[in-house]
Amino acid sequence: MTPRRSARLVMVALLAFVLSACVSGIEDNGDDGFISGSGEITFVDPGKREAAPVLSGTDLDGQELSTEDYEGTVLVVNVWGSWCPPCRKEAPALQKASEELADQNVQFLGLLTKDDPARAKAFNAKVGITYPSIDDSAGRNQAAFSGSLPSMAIPTTWVIDRNGKVAARVMGELTEATLRGLVEQTKKSTQ
Image: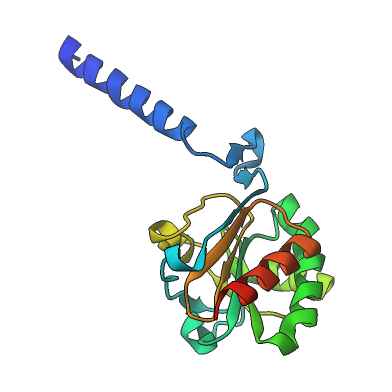
């Protein structure tokens, strides 16, 4: 290898390291194979919100599902996996909030990542999760938020206002109170 090529490889490696250190709100958990969020909450003023991506794919039963099916509702999108400890911990709070907010035109949708749909279905049955999830094993839907509020953390939850714009993001485990507060704030700020 020439000295010039070696220098280029070192520069590329250094640049990758620096860029990875610039990601805020997430932390590498080391041996567990995923990046979890630090709990950072971002709420966007209505005039500065970006359009939410159209999320689509098959649900855990293999049926086609799209966020276009939920136009005009406040949509809570949660990236999760049954293998993820913070996802398992927050799941009951998400289910409880989904039940309590269902009559207020709020829909919950999971984005299953890096998981087997059969294992995820078994987890949902055990915990009592009734809202649908899209199998997003390739991360295509999660990556579609790159134009608004991107996140590679698992779990991440986005709140999309009834006008189809990204209103909020939580990177990391959340509580029912935090989620309900973000949904209420989103509903009040969207006229």
